[in-house]
Image 1 (cartoon, rainbow, N blue to C red):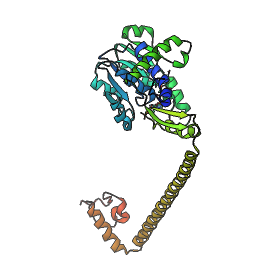
Image 2: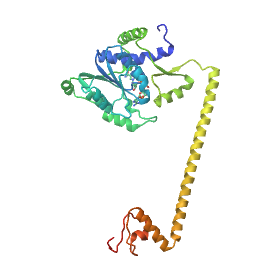
Image 3: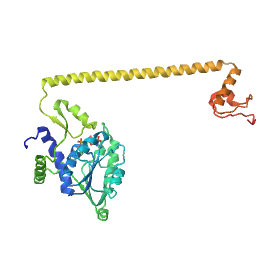
Image 4: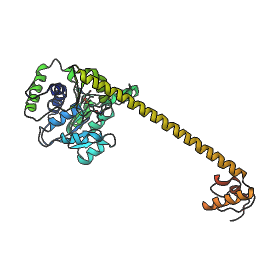
Length: 334
Ligand SMILES: NC(=O)c1ccc[n+]([C@@H]2O[C@H](COP(=O)([O-])OP(=O)(O)OC[C@H]3O[C@@H](n4cnc5c(N)ncnc54)[C@H](OP(=O)(O)O)[C@@H]3O)[C@@H](O)[C@H]2O)c1
């Protein structure tokens, strides 16, 4: 470990940076003035890829992430952050770079791989390294798995020839026998770290006892950068503090629940009250003298711009406010 590197940084560095480095430089041959799309730009690999792009001159980085994370990723080097939740990222990229992109890093799979491939310029490269679209929400979603599987991209080599494009796949987990390749990449990464050109971003650190909280943060997609689990046992004081927080959280949750229930009750009571009032009004109306009722209906109709002939057959007057035009059946011209 180089001087000045924390254990947290050391844990955050290898997988993210080796993955990003090998995709960008071994497959991608990233060169100055090129443009690249980095999905999940606020994630561990996304941040690593952005920082590595910045080691090459004038590389334009398009990065997709939730809007709340844009400030951080812009500061980290993303040239054009795109909120993929509210915008069509293909349209946004085409507006800025009508010719398309040189490299697309794709951890999503499914329909996003098609979009990425179609965004490539001639001689462009799509590097697929995940299928995150199969995970939707916090629970298992077989529909999302099936949909992503069904929409998975496949290409005929003949269309690759005509398209002048390349498609690559990367999985660090299946490169364990290539220790020399990995060592080479790691040596360059360490050098860049020492020069201060790259620095892992630690989102948060949790003790093993807090693994549930760490998982929740990741699952709810709140992290920007890496979540670290430390094996160092929690100090007694911290444990007490944690227990206190848990207790307070439970109380808070209970309060919120109670308030929700109370609000619901109030709403229901209000609805009931309104119903009662309506009923009362209706009975009052029925109790009115026919003459009074007739006058009232006529007034109401006139307010709405209706005209009533006033004869006994006029349905407007007989049924009152329910009709918006005079339905008089006496055929009298008004
Ligand atoms: N092939 C390999 O060798 C290799 C190596 C490492 C990682 N990976 C893959 O690369 C991807 C990124 O890893 P990471 O460690 O950078 O992730 P991470 O740090 O946990 O970042 C995840 C972030 O990506 C965004 N995101 C967008 N679409 C998502 C989706 N469908 N599911 C979950 N998150 C989504 C979320 O941020 P927003 O708020 O912006 O939506 C989320 O907070 C993962 O799919 C991982 O499996 C592959």
